[in-house]
Length: 192
Image (cartoon, rainbow, N blue to C red; front, side, top):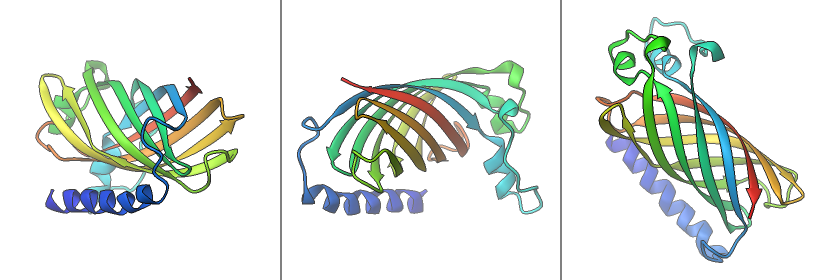
């Protein structure tokens, strides 16, 4: 856990240098509101950690679903700040015991602020971005935290509508509440 926190704070310091170059302020750039469909994969990270396990990615039918509402604010020409509220349907207790059953899903509610660093200027039609943040959630009746790191693709439709595809590895900071997981998201965001 110390390594994860050290990496997180080191990246924050590096991004601080990027913000210092052309800092407009958090509220002065373009703003987006988005809706996302999500899936969560708890099996793949567990199987990848097993030295004797098969290294495959779990299929969509064995992943759990959820949805999110997000707000994005352009901080500089290549850096976004985003905040996402997510509702997930997943059996958190069973996945921790290794006896997962998709029929016994429960609710998980998460809040996740993130920094998104883009490969190109925001006006680009296609743009790849690196994302990292810190998240917290209520899972069944327990509170947990995680450190999401991932990549995404953004399609800019005349700077009014954006299509977002994102994949994250979420490192759990509270392993007793929920395990590491892969998180996939497809969303549409609209300028306001």
